[in-house]
Length: 141
Image 1: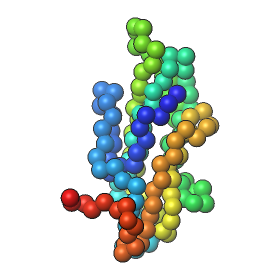
Image 2 (image 1 turned 120 degrees about the horizontal axis):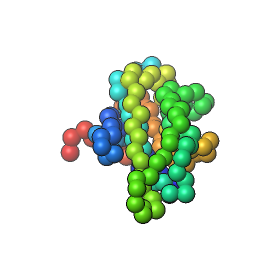
Image 3 (image 1 turned 135 degrees about the horizontal axis):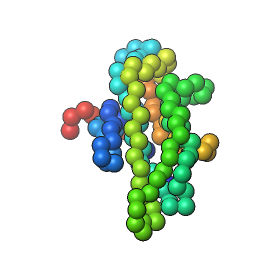
Image 4 (image 1 turned 180 degrees about the horizontal axis):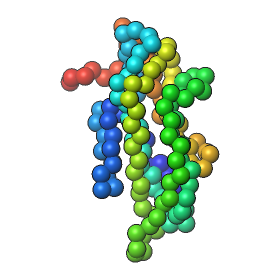
């Protein structure tokens, strides 16, 4: 199994097998703490080999530096292949959260676990406003 896409975004959804996401990001500049993010999504697209068909454990977890989970999805995904001779096919997921509270600035991470093994990690940097790093992207270009 291969992770093709893993991203944090303002919003993500799956429609007819297609993954869509709006405004991917990896940093938050908060005015005060605790900071409540009204909306956050994790977009995930997996490439699955026919030999891997069947049920697998899938965990998507947003954690702080101490390992405390702020947002979590723990599901059993049953990958089924369409009829035909395809050897691989992709599957998409979107985990949507609301009012996620960050108690303090720091480095956070979204870990993607498949059958208990971390297959991808997406960093999320939460900083105090005014301490912007060199990689921050403005809202308008």
